[in-house]
Structure formats: structure tokens, C-alpha cells
Image (cartoon, rainbow, N blue to C red; front, side, top):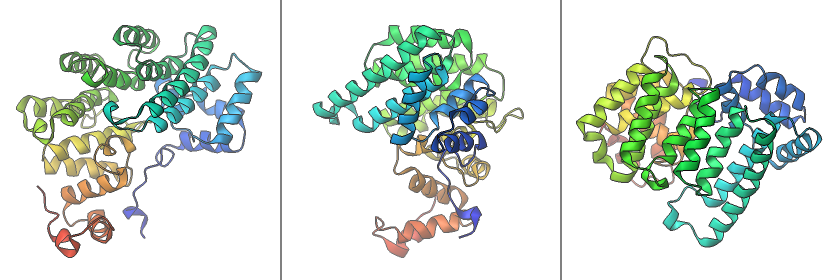
Length: 336
């Protein structure tokens, strides 16, 4: 199949830095990883750390590195994120009421171990934003509450005021499902957008906040005029702005707006996002609808019609075992 028809979802597909760090970890060469991470801007560094492979071999390597050099906060942050990812896999992405007590117990136990790793590293290196960003995840999962989360975020903001990974975690924390409120999460996202430089990824927080609203309220949520205005304004200040750059994280930014415009039934705007994304798909936010690649392909087919890769998207949808409508499904994949 031609390369232009592939969908690439792995974090290292679009970012050479992530690929280099992943390769270094697989080879057991931590110094090669540090060479990349030490040169990265704070926000990029955290994003690269989050994109590493979650394998037993990598975890064992990081255990050895942190034991040999407790002052290596980069290794501690990477290990912490790996442990957090493992904890969340145990919990699954289901709503709390659908997660059994056994899973919650294992989830909390694993998060507590990650919290200990992060706290020990923060005692030694309190100026590392990657550690604080990871600690926002443990604080949320362990239900430490909004006061503690705000305190941890404040430490990140002191070091890097526009640290997108940490800000995105606060969007989750301030949502009602984690004890926050809609006014709080929207106010946070809008303020972050307006105080960040135009063209920054930060404005995507507004779209993320509204996707949380959609999850709670259903498809009609994006029919609200004020929601639509918010999303358009956020896109104009980020992905549609002349200063927007394809730095680390750009794939998720474009994909987030692609889903938002899809839900708004703004076909041309969604199509522009899919053209900008090319073959690159991010797991977030598509996992909210289906498997990320399947959801990405379906939405892209609706937006692009019968042009380019959308033709392959439609054919793959028809031949999927989950599709029971056959050729009628292909003919019926019109914009709805």
C-alpha cells in the first residue's frame, strides 16, 4: 500500500527525537537518551519522556539508572511515567462506576509506587517540570483533590508558564468527573490560551475542555453556538495561526481539532485538519470514539469524501469484520 494511505499512530512516527530516545532505551544506552532530552525545551522534554516504550526491559534499565544515580531526575521522570502508564492500563479507560474494586486496588497500589519515585526525585530536584507534570497524574489517580493538584501545577507554572502537558492534565483534573466544574475547567483553558503566545499549542486546551463536555452531554453539545465559537477561536489562535509550528505535540493538536470539527459537522474545517495531519493519528482524542485508527479513518472518510486516502478509508471500513452493512455501508458513509 502506498505510504500516503498509511495511518501512523505511534509517537515516534512524527517525531525523530522520540524515535531516537526509544531506540536508545531499547539498546540500553541511557546516555544517548540523555543527549536528546537534555537539549530539549522543557515542554518538549516532558512530551518525549511520555512517548517512550512501556516495556519490562525499559523499566529494568530505568530502575538501574535511578538506583545508580538518584540525582538523575530525567530517569526518575521517565520511570514515573512508565509506572503511571502501567497503572492506567490496569484501571482501563472506563468510567469509575464500571471499574471493579480489585482493579482500583491494583491501580492505586501502582500509582502509589510511582508517587514515591516522583516524590523522592522532587526532594532532590524540585525544579524539574517533568517530575511535577507526572505528579499531577498520580495526584489525580490517587484522588488527592483539587487543592493539591493546583499546588502541584503552580510549581510547574513557576518553572515553565506554558507547559502544555501539565496544563492538559489540569483540564482533566478540573473537569467534573475528577471533582471540578465546567466553569472552572473552561476558565482555566481560556486563560491559558490568552496568556500563551499566539500560535502555541496551548489553545488546544479549550477544545479539550469542550470534548470533556461532549463526553458528558452527547453529540448535541457541539451544536451550542457558544461552544462552536470557542472551538473556532481556539483553532484560529493555534493550528490555523501563521505562527503555528509543527514541534513535538503538533499531531495531537491537529487531531484534537479534527475531532472537534467533525462533531461540529464542519466538514471543510475538519477536512483541513485531516489534510494537515496527513498520515499521522494520535491516540487522543480518537480513543473516545473507537480504536484510534478506526475512528480517525471513519472521520477522515466523512470529511474528505472520495478524495485521496479517504477512498482507502472507506474500503477498509467496508471490509472490517465489525461492518455488517457491506457495500451499503460504503455508499452510506456520507457526511451526517
